[in-house]
Length: 240
Picture 1 (cartoon, one colour):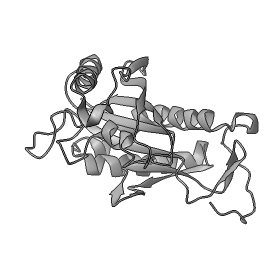
Picture 2 (cartoon, rainbow, N blue to C red; picture 1 turned 180 degrees about the horizontal axis):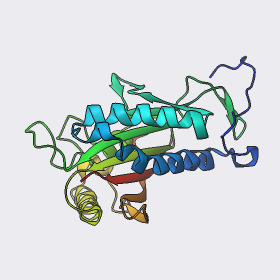
Picture 3 (cartoon, rainbow, N blue to C red; picture 1 turned 45 degrees about the vertical axis):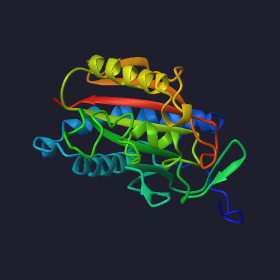
């Protein structure tokens, strides 16, 4: 944080001052992304795009451009550095210094990390079959896994995951992912870091069932994480 930088008030389009509590502000960001996902999905240039890097780049550019119109206190950055040689897929940063709960956040401080994954995981001997949750032993390529271990968002208490659902239904993936979380807890994976109390809960079906919003809370390693748990929002977008 830059202590001597003059405090800037949130720009036009940000939540009102009385809503500028960290959790509420992050929920406003998630709601913005949620509204933009089906709009982005209809872009004609996505018709033949399936690979994750190009999807992530397109989504980040779309969100950043759209935020200029309706949420101009934030910006979206592709592959922000998370430390330890790792990068998130997308990061949300303030445009100017903002104050949340008495703490200033400069324009270089990540407000919300975003991890994106394809469902299903593309077949690859070097990847787990359900990389949304975890990777192969020793690789730490799993989405939820990275937040639990503090590889991503170690200074953030909230995180967002986006799934590009390219096959099967949203209900299918909720069942599969919760089964995998239960299995990891039962197996005592990562010295018991995975808990049976961490399933994803359905929040809402949105936009003609094209978007599925879920929530979860996960135990994490401290250190390197700054908090013993990470609260996660999940937005799953039907791509097929």
